[in-house]
Image (cartoon, rainbow, N blue to C red; front, side, top):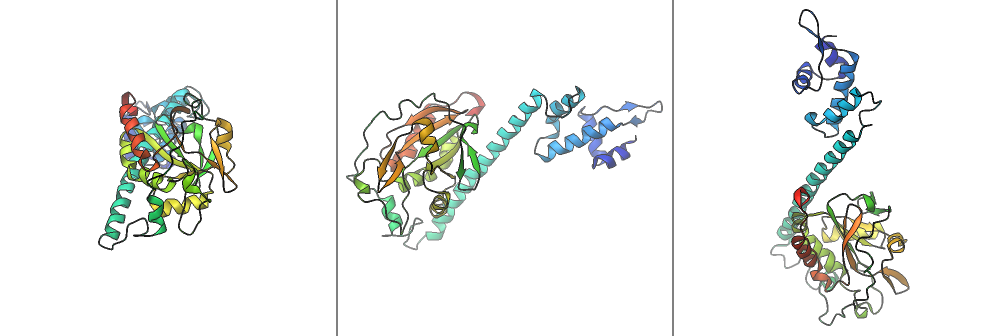
Length: 323
């Protein structure tokens, strides 16, 4: 088979085929007259290269998959080296997504500042609004006690639970990857027009969810730079409620919804009762490779907590490229 026929069957160009040859990814036989002689196996290899490249794997990194086929495997990803290449590609893509997310957060901040400049109203809803009230914590806010309710968590494996996020995706908590994921758990986010449970301000550790979320929003880029791979808020509120909060506050990350308290029941996370509702107590977990590496509990004051997490990340950097 000549190169033109190979290119036609594989859906590519002769120039691309020559490039694959230059990398040693395909090695056709030579006829007596010196012409290359391609076979059906070469067509399969070129198709595999194109398919992998379409998934975002650079051409020069498709070699493990081609070697897997050459070894007689039915599929190019049947071999351990192929799976490792998938993981590398996923990690690189995650880093790109995180960088773009951080850039998006910066743009949102710039947009909010520009849109409200000189208007006399803040991005959260304006002077004297209910939104501003949620951000301003009472000076006499009671601090929660160190009750030891989360002491058992560090070193614990995260259960294989899937929780829905505000982007509509099912997130497997045990598959968040080798980079540190920050999951801040909170009881209840207030929003304008929605009453909070009676006596909310007097319950230690209850008030401050909106201020806490805004803190993670404002420190989001710094958290990523300090080694956080992902940031999630988590509560028992439904995704529709959380989605409104994400939009209104301009959060650059998603919230996780756990209305059935599956994570609380699986890990023994502390909860409390208020207004006839079961709610999460405030805590933050640093999760890495499916294991809880560190826990913040109790959390106080909530409006400064993102800075506390940032300080911990900076003081406990991961070795090597993961940082």
